[in-house]
Amino acid sequence: MGQELQESIVLAKMPKSLSGKEFTYCPGCHHGIVHRIIAELIDEFQLREKTVLVAPVGCSVFAYEFFDVDGTVAAHGRALAVATGMKRARPDMFIITYQGDGDLAAIGTAETIHAANRGERVTTIFINNAVYGMTGGQMAPTTLLGMKTTTSPYGRTPEREGYPIHIMEIMKALPGVAYAERVKVSKPQDIPKAKMAIKKAFYAQLLDVGFGIVEVLSTCPTNWGMDPVEAQRWLEENMTKEFPLGVYVDKVTEVMKEKGVK
Amino acid sequence: MGEKIMVKGTEAIGEAAIRAGCRVYFGYPITPQSELTEYMARRMPQVGGVFLQAESEVATVNMMYGASSVGARVMTSTSSPGFSLMQEGISYMACARLPGVFVDVVRGGPGLGDIQPSQGDYFQIVKGGGHGDYRLPVFSPSSLQEAVELTIHAFDVADKYRTPVVIFADGMMGQMMEPVEFPDPIDPSTLPSKDDWALTGAKGRKARYVTSFDIDPYKLEKMNLVLQETYKEIEKNEQKWEEFMTDDIEVLFVAHGTVGRIVKSAVKLARQKGIKAGLFRPISLYPFPYKRLSELAEKVDIVMTVEMSSGQMLEDVRLAVEGKAETPFYGRLAGVVPTPGEILEALMKELRR
Ligand SMILES: Cc1ncc(C[n+]2csc(CCOP(=O)(O)OP(=O)(O)O)c2C)c(N)n1
Ligand code: SF4
Ligand SMILES: [Mg+2]
Image 1 (cartoon, chains in turn purple, green):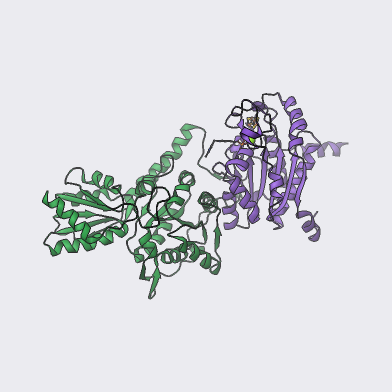
Image 2 (image 1 turned 120 degrees about the vertical axis):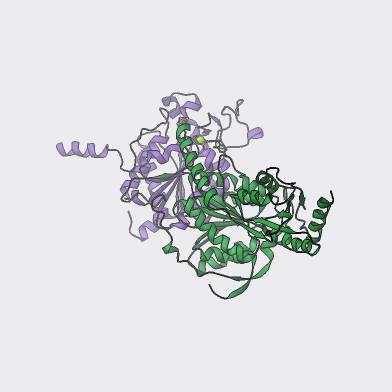
């Protein structure tokens, strides 16, 4: 009993790779959950001393302050070009980009596709919350059809705004991609799955297989105009339909087996 | 120093960068500088360096941001439209205090323009084409030997002040062939360490970041003031210029880069006609050598600026001259290169006024 208690205390500890600075995210926002998963993995892999985190312009622009690793903020959309520059110059370092949907799938689409296609040995965490959070809830490339945002006030239509973009499906077409999975973190049982996905995306880089990316379907209660609980439900009911969860590319598991990595 | 080798301008700059210890190059093809990109593609693997053709100049500058932030000596080369695309990233690099060398082989514009030599991007390069209160040291060579020396110097200036630096070349520079003497290569491992600021991993120290961002205006103002202090130092230490036949001047030309070279011929032609002309050739366009030009302006009635533009450096010349002399201008646009005869004629017209 005593031992069990001790263990549970250890599990609840703040990951070393988080700085301890209080998150500035809104209640019910998933950015914070994903930060924690990443930090736990950096700790588990003992990568803190060789990690550089490239934060985006978006709500997670302060990510570099929340993590206790070296970091920078890329220009809006350019995180994967910045990461490419870092990894090419210092292949021994561990490079993570953390990007929103506007950042990765609108303004930065070219950098995303080409870094992925070159198989850059970097790991990308892609937060798809279907809106531009930071700038106040404008339409994102991933905004669902019918969804109202401040710049699609009558609801997104295919005729006017086009369709939501599916990044994981695009990743499937790029030979440089070693791991691509779409996950969610809205329920407790999602967390281990999301963590495993990000772990594989880490391995894509660590085992020199190729580019690793994990898309996390995320909430933005503030700009969706919902309370946190409603937002979770809305994500479950709508986003998972448009953006099917699952593994889209996995060249990592096989290499892990070959190399005897668990 | 070794023997003199005949090289093409683009290759001279590329080889100079390698000898300066640059081991990371990103670029995107654009005439009239693609040979430099191609040269780096051949050379970098031979010296264990990194060459990567980016998907655009936007990606290029951000790759430079990344490589520089982890401590690499990094370079790119481009031409006017490509340099336009890099502006946001250059502004980020300037604020984040990231060194890097940009070679802009300027061509005729605006728009797609043409692929002939031009100086029409002076405002963009020298006055800052990106957003915010930043400056970039800019060097304008007029010969290949000077291009080699300035390229190497550019890396040192970039590292010393932690700033992007631009080599302002033009298509003529890029395409000409000249004998050049290269200095001995620098072993990159002997370069001054950047461990006090670069993102090398939080090992044995606190985590750190390089950024151009602070939401608090007072803190951002502090970052800005550090930049401004740096620029003061640069203005104090990094002015460069050449004076040609200025001992006994009656009239003074001001021209930079390859135009400076053409104007030297015009100076000689003028002297054959008994006109005591001389040339002031700014080599550092920022910091512009205002003080020395101001001193020279006191000796003459006419300070004539010649550019391959509509008169952009002219504004700096006028700031230096401060009304102490007439400041006429002669320029050709869009990639047309002025001849010494033309320039002399323009001067004669002024003298007849
Ligand atoms: C070049 C440029 N254009 C526009 C912006 C303004 N901007 C900042 S964040 C952002 C969108 C962020 O949305 P997303 O990437 O989805 O991140 P989120 O805030 O939703 O996490 C925009 C348009 C900018 N900073 N830079
Ligand atoms: S605005 Fe949206 S994405 Fe940004 S912190 Fe708030 S909930 Fe999260
Ligand atoms: Mg978003």
